[in-house]
Every structure is written in C-alpha cells, then in structure tokens.
Length: 371
Image 1: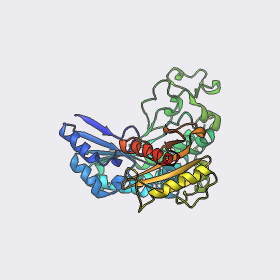
Image 2 (image 1 turned 60 degrees about the horizontal axis):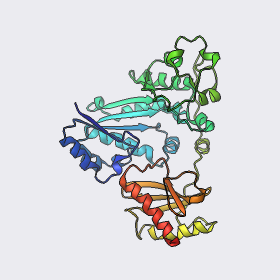
Image 3 (image 1 turned 180 degrees about the vertical axis):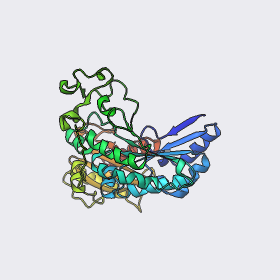
Image 4 (image 1 turned 90 degrees about the vertical axis):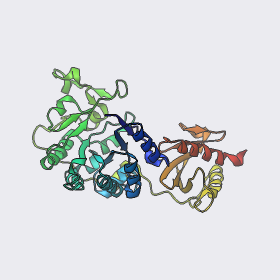
C-alpha cells in the first residue's frame, strides 16, 4: 500500500484552490491511501468534500476540543469552529472516508469529554461505524509556553485519568496518546498509549526530582517530569487514593487565560494614536470588501494590540491574520521592508505560495506611500 498525507505539518491544504487537482494527481500516481489532516472548516461544506472524495481522498484526520461551544470555540480561536468540525465529521463519514478524530485532553474541557466522546461516536451510524476512529491526545506543551498558560490548559495527570476512565466505561477501546507522560504515571492508567517521543533536543525542560525519581526502576527510560508541570502542580503525580475530578472552567476565566481580546474593530473605526497607524489605515481602506483586493484577499478587520496592528484578511475559502508594525519595534517578523515588518498569527501559517505572496503584497502596499 502506498500512502500519502496532506497537512501533517500543521498546514491547511484546503486553502489551496488546486488541492483537489493535487489529490487527483496522487491517485493517478498510484497512492491508495490519501489522507487529509485538516481543521475541518472547509470540509464542513459537503460539496467541497465530495469533490475531494471523487478525486481520490480516502481519509480525514481532525481534532476536537470537546463539544461545549462556549469553551471549545475559544480554544479553537474561532466562533462556530466546533459546529463546523461536527459537520466535517458527518460529511466525511457520509462520503465513505475513514475518519480519525482526536479529542484534545485540555483542562478547560476535560470535565465534559466523557459526554463528548459518545456524542461524536454517535455521528457514525451502523453503516459507517467502522470508518470512525476516535482517540484522545494529551498534547506535548510548547517549550516556550508561559507557566500560567500551561497551568490553565494542561491538566493534572489525575484529572486526565478521571476523564479517560469514564470514556472507557462507554467506549471500551478508547486510547489516550501521550509522549511526555512519565513512565510511572503511564503504567498506572489503563488506556494510555505512548506516542512517538519528540526528537532528542527539541524539549529539554524535564526534571527528575529526587522525591519522585530516586530509586525508580524506570528512570533510565523516562525523561522525567515536564518542569512547568512540576512547578505548577507538584506532587503527587496521581492521587494516592480516590480520583481527581476536574472542575468546569468559566468561559470568562478561559478568555483571560488565553489573553483573548474583544473582536477587532472594522478598519477605520478604532482610533489611530500614532502617525504610522493613520498611514496604514489609509492604505488599507482601499482593500475593504467592494474595493480592490490583494492576491484575492480583502481586509475585513483591524485593531491595535500593543505596538502592533492586527489585521484580518479574508478570501473565498480562507482567513489570515497579519501583524503589521514598524520595523524598528519588531522583535520578530516574517518579512521586513524599509519601514515596516509583517508577520502572521500561528493560526494561519504561511504554508501556501498565495499566503506568502499576500504577506509580500501587503508589505509593498503599506510602504508605497513612503516611496
């Protein structure tokens, strides 16, 4: 069997207008298993997914952050994302595709996952039950994540065990995948499957505290405890008796933990406080819907966030957030011109040529008045 996967590097292939043709090409080349890893936003449209299925797509992989939309949409950074993902799962099953769904074991939604998992499973009727594969994931935290955000998002191992135990009472073969969970914890929780560990050197923030690891028979096979976990949650890693039930997370507290601000104001509405803001807003007015576009994108919203201007660009099947700031103030950026630097939000990585062209074109447009 010849396999090919699209989107496995956290890109979004469905934003490319030529993606269906690429799938068709892969099928003609003899690939028999063609899988798409996706956010699910675009395949919530049944007609588009049908086009991909007819081109040769055989499987879809996507993740869910629970089904409580007040919280899961915040975690997914997009209103309506949860409903769109559910529609994507239903569409994928209806088109006869193998559908892999990963439930993210994040602290704010952990308490409701035992109810979410069966609801997702029920999307597959008896005709399509074998095509839906459901599992959990205790994500590896980013090495640079701030400790307070880590504490808000990553559960205690006991809380994850509580949710996993209850899901397995209703879905017997459900597994939780984790690569950084200490061996002493993993061996005490039924249903934990060890994912491939991160390559050596990619994450060095592990410790082997003497109170836990001294004399442990598995210490030579274990990286230890992730330092922010140890600093935040401490010992014990699992409760000595009983269970550790997670508490529901208030959406306002989650919004604060994620540092989510109010929705951006339309371009031209938010007050400009510096001359460069006025210059950029004046340029962007030319690219609002109904006027000109840049690489097929119109600017939809914009707001100030600290020293930067955050702009939202939309196309027919795509949305991208571009950060604009003076070059002299920019600590990091994707590209820089003579006066300005532009970058992107991680929710919209520049993984297609059209997106990179958009970044360059926006930079050229805002620097044109200075030429």
